[in-house]
Length: 134
Image 1 (cartoon, rainbow, N blue to C red):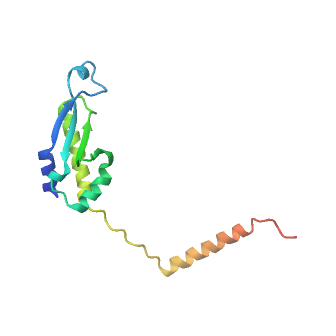
Image 2: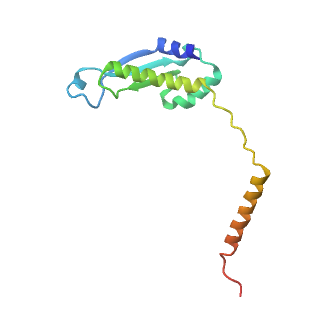
Image 3: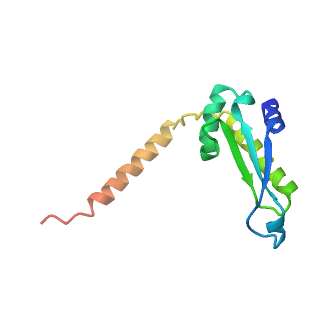
């Protein structure tokens, strides 16, 4: 699992673009936002993880199989680069770790009796709400 994430970070293409937001005149002069692109097919992700990745990545996954992440929340290239790499790592970790199977809960006999008794009480309350018969 760690190998796939390391491989993704290794082959990721970074492109710096002009960012909006805080930074004063600096934002107009320096391309601080980073756009990170990773081809999912090149990192060797298992098919079941790829299906989960499609759901997790959503619109960030292109038709060509690239994950495109844009980070522009910080004023420096280095901080934005780190933020984009952390996001990529989080997405891949979520996709590679299958969700735990849900176990059916079992109610014991006492719990069943209590629940049925509560239902009966509630039904009686509702039945008594109607118009009284003359």
